[in-house]
Every structure is written in C-alpha cells, then in structure tokens.
Image (cartoon, rainbow, N blue to C red):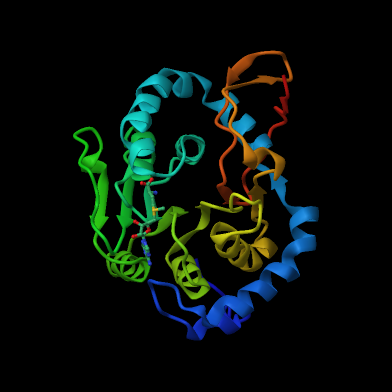
Amino acid sequence: MKLSKEELNYEGRECSKEHPPCNCRAEEEKKLLESFSDALSNKSKSIRSLVAHLYMNHKETFLGNYVRLNDFHNAIGMREGSTGKEDCWLLYLLVKEFKPKCIFEAGTFIGTTSKFLADAAMTHGGEVHTCDPVNSYTSSATHDSSIYRYTMGAVGLVAELEHRRKEVDFAFFDTDLPNNQVEDLLGVAAEEFVLVAHDFYDSDDNLSKGARNLIFAWRILESRGYQLFIPDLAWSKYRMDTVRLKDGTKVFSPIGGTAAALLPPSFKLEDHLWRES
Ligand SMILES: C[S@@+](CC[C@H](N)C(=O)[O-])C[C@H]1O[C@@H](n2cnc3c(N)ncnc32)[C@H](O)[C@@H]1O
C-alpha cells in the first residue's frame, strides 16, 4: 500500500524501539486517542453486527469446526493464557470471509491465534507469518506447514516480508506496537487489507493497546473508506454462550472479546443484528 507524504507525517516516527515499548510516545498517543474520541462514537461500527454478518455467511463451517477448535482452545490456549476464544473465533471467521493469502501476526506466544488463523486459511492456500522475540511456540501437526514462525519483533518481520516481496492482506496485532511500526506494516500491505488488534479495551473498559494501533491506522485509512469495528463497552465485560438472531435462531456466540477490526471499503455489512435473549 503506497502511503502519501501527508499520510506519513505523524510526529511519532522517531520512536523505533521494539520491546519493551518506549515511553516517549505515551503523551502523543494520549493526544491521538483524545482527538479520536468523537470520531470513535460517531463513525465506528459495532463488532456485534460484524460477528453476526460473519456468522451468517459461514455458519456451516463455524458449526462444523466449533467443537474441534473449542476443545483445542480449552486444552492449550486457556491453560497458557492465550488470546480468548471469542477473539480467536473472530479471527477465524474474518479469514473465512476475506480469504487472505498472506497473514501477518505480531505476538505468537504459544501460537493459539496463529493456529486459528492457519486453520481458516489452509483450505484456500493462505499462509500465516507470525513473529515473537521470544520463542514459546507449541507445535501442531495440523497447522505447522501453514505457519511461518520468526523469532524476532514486528520490525524484523515487516523487513523480511518486504525483502521477499510479500504483500500482506491480513494482519493481527497481539502486542503493543509503536505507531511507526503500524505505519511500516501499512507499507507492505495490499491496497485492500484487514487489520485486527487485540485489547481495544482493557478489563476496566479503558482504551488499550489495540485501540492505539487501530486508531492510528484508521487515521491514515479512513479517507480511503476503511471501516472501524469496535467492541461495545458493556459487551466486553462478559462472555455469552448463546445468543438469538433477529429471526429467533439460537446460536453459539463468538461475541464478547476485546478485539477490534479495520475492514476495507469493499466490505458491505449485511443486517443480521443479534437480539438479546
Ligand atoms: C499476549 S501474547 C500473544 C498471545 C497469542 N496471540 C496466543 O494466542 O497465544 C503477546 C506476545 O507478544 C510478544 N511480543 C512482544 N513484543 C513484540 C514485538 N515487538 N513484536 C512481536 N511480538 C512481540 C510477547 O513476547 C508475547 O509472547
């Protein structure tokens, strides 16, 4: 994705430290979040409606794989403190919807989300490129051939993918990245791509690391028609096993996570609103 000069003028570019994130950007990012608070409430869309759309489009696949992946998450992900199940399902459904070929992930840890991403991408030949400065990955015979692992930070993986002329069409952040690294990722992104970030809100419903990264990317991409989907505050507090669709169907709910998504202009949301039972 070619970024214009105007799009590249964010003041925070001088900070390039990877991990732990440096504090010099905290003040600037606070200002950025404040300047977006109105836009957030007026222009963003609810992730509930996105999940309903994704669920209806991929219902058979979701239900067909629900028990297998749910058991897998219970056995490994939950025990080790990986990304929550609801957000793993959101990633899975988004990959089914957009069929990305080259998925970028920052924050492998034991690889639970990498495996949900790979599980969804394998059937259409998609690859997951995932990085973490610490190698804690646990192997999976089903997924390993679709997951390329890099023991390095996000800066290194962006450079590697650029070198290999890969175009990223889906990215997931599960770590706190400085904004200049988000900007660097946009440099290797396809014109139309999907960006998901974990922890839009923290457990007290304050904006968190996912919000900083997504809002920064949205600042650049909003004028191109990108759409921001964020969790509803009240819903981010609790988990639900089932919900009802407007037509009365009772289904499992992948709602209740803290991830948010930035989707390309071509995405048209269909109206399948959830109804609380
Ligand atoms: C919350 S964990 C990720 C959990 C993972 N998604 C899962 O489902 O198992 C965050 C990980 O980000 C890694 N990390 C920290 N700084 C990073 C960076 N600059 N680039 C990539 N990963 C980083 C940490 O080492 C940690 O393992």
